[in-house]
Image (cartoon, rainbow, N blue to C red; front, side, top):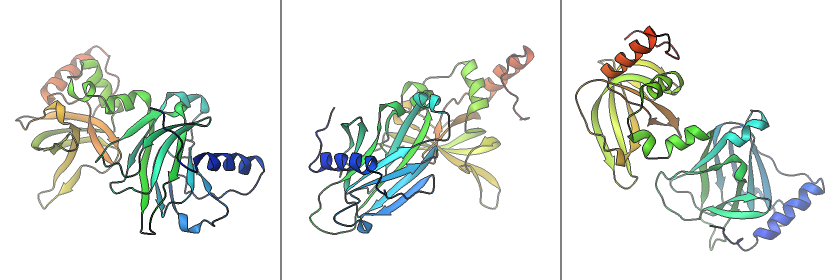
Length: 292
């Protein structure tokens, strides 16, 4: 749905065009991945629109006392030809407030996140070629502390689709999908389901995993705990998948998404051993995995 520009938005956009066209000095602030700033640094008569340039595949924006507007330019360190294959996802901070977030392309605006919208853990995704992010502060009745903030991630469109559709994490993976997941996933572990916590509000389930073998992990989600030296961790999936505690070992694979492990393919380990051996005997296994 197309959102009508908020009061003051068009002058800000026009002012930005003049600012860039006239060669005036813009305000830049970035550590390539993350940006933090405050509207209190703005003078009342200028710098209404601030340009933010970020060059990482993931990071965050944190804007205190938002005033005026931000244009967030995400420029990953990849070939521009690959941009059309990218999806951008943003996840607002839990208490984010003080601004609307728009998707903007050639002056046309689409409201993405409305100020004050409370949707725990909700993620908003769009194609990189659909436009950029325009964050506009909303009028405030007082000067109380407000922070507009969100995390962002850029990923391949196929991966983004898998993370945000019910069918991908819920349906059983084929043998080929499992073998590819072992090669390409952010984490690959052999483990058991110790418990499952269902979060109805967020429509998610948290799988508490006891790890018997850690093959690979991108982030330190699975860690040694206690004096026993056991590895444990948590994996999230959709509530609709209906995961339940059960006996036996599984091969858990998946992706990291906003710092959380998201479930991908998860066959029973004995089934994985069978399909891996069959592929290896035929020379068709796409990559090697360490010993059990």
